[in-house]
Image (tube, rainbow, N blue to C red; front, side, top):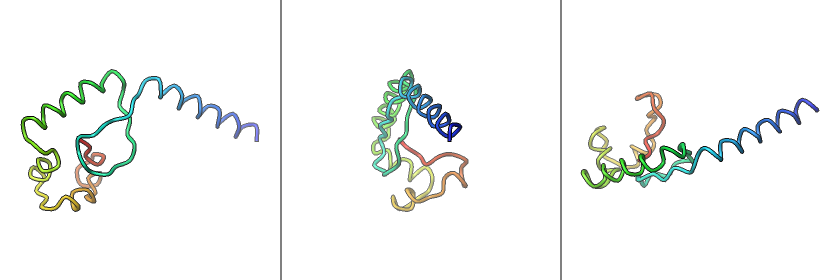
Length: 92
């Protein structure tokens, strides 16, 4: 029981430390995905890069669908990109 309490305390401390160094990621995609964090120092560059991509190519979801050869947004959202592409689901 003491070890379990110490483990929970360590997990809580780790989560608190992460909150100080990460912020919520705001995707450009309309896909419904879980909560993702991004390092604080990368949040603005990521947002700027995604905005530039959207300005250049229009709707991000349509752009990704075209590049990956998907005809339907639902299929893209359900695709097992981890297995096929070695990445987490695409979040733009």
